Length: 119
Image (cartoon, rainbow, N blue to C red; front, top):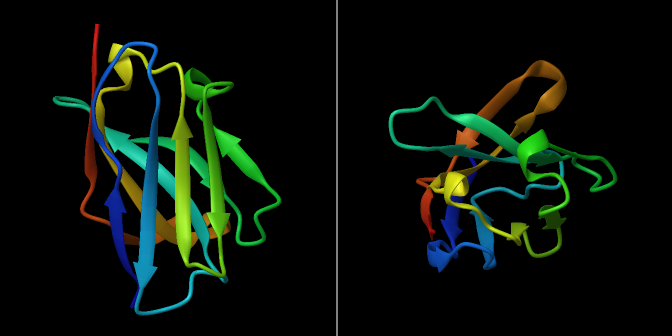
């Protein structure tokens, strides 16, 4: 069982930056692919970014490429998402997840952290 807890959300003006963190407990994350998802009000949850268990392979949804950077520290059991150039359309609850990308199976989820970007 992997317990995930996100932090770092908040209210920021358009063009600003936030850094989200996700701390894992209960089990080491080194064997898991990790990802960030987000869900805006009235919309379905969408994939934002992922990083494989080695940290060597990353992927992003097109709308955040060049603005967001995902990273992980397996020694600290943490996942991060650096978000720069934030836009109002980035407003959502952001969730971190752990699982296996090749099985399309993210079994472990955090409770989420709210990111609000004002125009």
